[in-house]
Length: 128
Image (cartoon, rainbow, N blue to C red; front, side, top):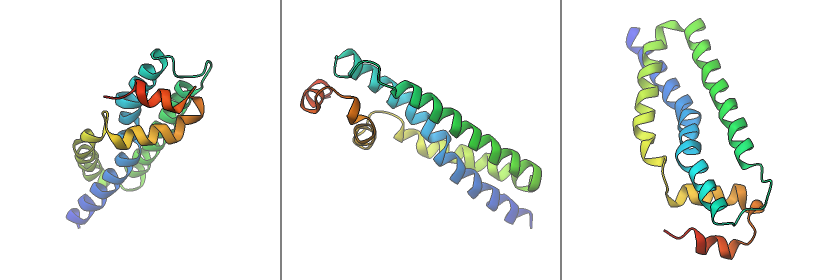
């Protein structure tokens, strides 16, 4: 029975971390630096709410992670070790998704294209 609790906690930890902590990492290691780069290139409209949106998203994701951690600790404490192991494994597998890559750039474009002055100029300014 202890192994079952460990595996259940492991999968809960991996799932929750993949959708919360990894997303915060993408915001910190790609979203914010990329937005700063595009802003410094003069391609963003004035007063865009991207950084405010990143802050709100990060706070909501932290709250979700903490609430699920609290729930596991309160209602299923025998799975807590598995939860932590699953969280660490998810972080290790997710490290490669945190930096500049085409998927992150595409997601950024689909979310923030409305704050760009001109999409063609944006593509020229952000070529790597």
